[in-house]
Length: 319
Image (cartoon, rainbow, N blue to C red; front, side, top):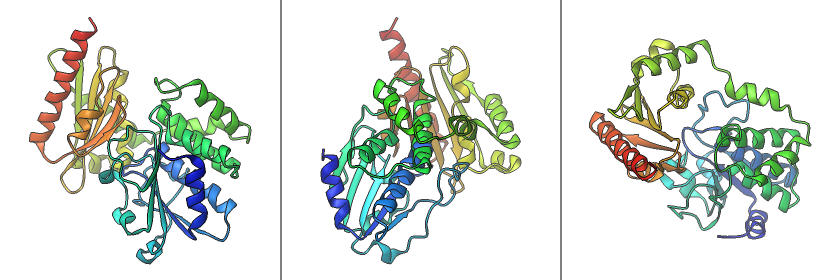
């Protein structure tokens, strides 16, 4: 793993820097990408610094929106990915067109794809790492930058409930709060849903099925469901935490059909590690929260059975 100083030295060398994050972005992906870009723009006003990825970021446009990035922008450019564990999950596969690639992430480093990297799997969020980078290198930290970082940390810690939350996480948050960010408004932005999304959450509960043990849940949301309610695929992410609020459920899947007929698979867990399961299906992530892809109903059934087996073993080992 490289140091912050080595990464900053490389950043200084390039007139054009393009930042990528993962597909189906969450607040940590958007926030880490945006915060690093905004801070570098202030530090290096003569550099061209761009953010790219799919333009539809769901309800996260209050954190940041994407720039228009042309193929020719990559010529001689430095590319930085944030919050992205492996290459299939990099949003905008043109990252390969750059001159040099840096990876900044907090997921397990299962795919060391970059020329230079800083990966700390103990960090609660990629935004925590970016905040430390900004602090260590003396880069600008404005209220706008702090908002993006705080939003990402809140999102990836589940409002500071998850195990990865550490004393250092709160030290970082304290620095961010000193800029005067409105943490109540950020919390509202992350928790509020539209009436249509609320209906989708209800539908996810109606569609939810349990294995015979009652420990594992699955809900599959079709394109027809989304169209009926007027909800986009990114907006459907509000359903991911819904099964976990039910007492007795230990692991669960929320699976959303995409426009091309494949499925976005959301794994969640209250104990069993599920990231290895996701990696077997073109995905990855954290031990208790991961994403993957299913190509058809057969693969969905396989994914569910794999999760049932892992959950069963976990339960036996902890009785």
